[in-house]
Image (tube, rainbow, N blue to C red; front, side, top):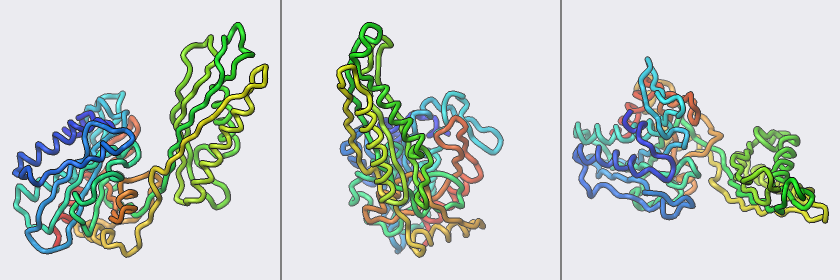
Length: 377
């Protein structure tokens, strides 16, 4: 409840990291066990602080295990006032989401660390990791210095959904930044002299929608998603707008189809720019920068981390099930960087919406599962 109430959108996570650090220190974790990475200095967003890493040397033999969960929330959750309503927690502020994504995961990892220290539980070597900037491109996992994590053999991430769910794969995504340049003119006195950047953007988006390349995209056996999520431009109704900025994305588990989505978006905007002309035949221009945000992945069926997670879930009398995500996870980048990571749920429902809730029973099961994974021989 305390963590969900702390504002901490991507890039502004310092107070969240301070809270977790304070809890660990008060429990008796020595300062030498705590490190901050420099991921925020390498990310496009920059930000206040990097992720927090806490290492415990083992009190018994066994492979090092990584337990992790990101600490940032989406902007919709700034101002959350968590309240308990029966068997769920929701935001008492009707204008905000709850922030259980992923403060519930961060708390699962923190609880495991605190229980081990306070109860002096035996455990193999452990690394606890709270990365930043997951919601804006998985930058905390992308840019963490891997030596800080201590070369774990098994890796577990908590980030959404049912506590019995194991996410063993996730989609990949491209991000696009689109700049449209038109020609300004007086919208009442000489509109024919102008080239509207807004008109160009409208035509391009309408084409993508009409031809089935926007939203849930299905072409034969190929499947993906695309979205124009940000449009910025214009300051007055009496000016033909000469500049518009847009941000868009394209996702698919199929690498080639994802590239086709990017190509279709690019062509739609370039064609629209050529189509909108003023009375002298001058048309607009489009500049598009695209980058791979994260690559898709699927863990092998016999992956050791998946097997360990399934065993922990069964040990508390539950039956695990495997899933593939259409959203990105910190596991995308860690797996790509040589650290295969399985993602477990911890009771979040309807993330990124005003109706977000936390299932308390599922959250408590997730805490038990995490402690089993951290202390099992």
